[in-house]
Image (cartoon, rainbow, N blue to C red; front, side, top):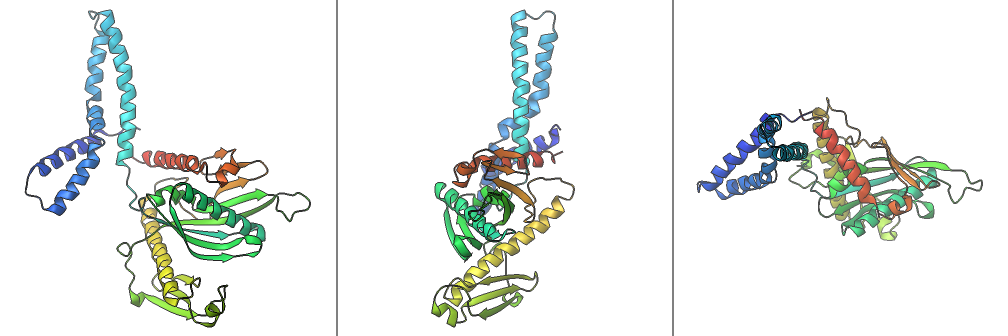
Length: 358
């Protein structure tokens, strides 16, 4: 579907308007900063926009030369080459402009909170949850992101029932947002004597870390209960009411936190998780309204959707949303080729968004 010229004209007109505004001295510092940012963003695409607008006129001029019986053969040949380049460049410009016009996700630049839970499959599921967590740890280390555990619940044999962590760095959420969903593993467990392949799963949820300015939580909307921790951590943890359960009354969301010996620290961590969950809930409601008429394979973020299978006997990892299979499972689990998967998912998401521009 071609890009409507009126949308491109709007870019050019807005760029000219901002240029005039910025050349006057009547703007306060806040308005100047805002308009400068907008002008800078438009500068990235203004060349392509002007070329796209002028494409039809330039094409007609070249065709006129090619169709002119009196034109010199060398000039006609040059015009044919120029026309081919012009059409090729126009397709590139069209895609660049469409990508520029895509709605920006305000959360892309934020840090992320990642929650990993063992799903169906008993002990093997908890071991896989641990493997998935280690994979994200390795990715974070390679990218020099900072990962901090908020809470962790271990199972037998080194597995994980649940782990919640923050990951901090540049544009973290945009890199991890397509990880939400059910991750399925197929492999022969160490305890399997017959060599049979077992299937189990872990659920991953990735949320943007919300600041206080993003989500306003009123004290009157919270019910906070304290209780004694039942987890490991020593006698002082088990004999004081340090664990905290926070209920957000308007949404019904409940967060429990007991990893710290301090009740205050548990409350702080609990509120951080709660804020992220409320923010994500608000984003989901807004996105549902926006996407009623859109079909998206990968942008749903539905935690119950099976998104990926890790097949150890065959050494492959498959993302079901984009039908991408990488026969490099061991490298993937080491965080080596994580970017290859992310880039493929991002391209698919962009293509889906582009198809909605009319």
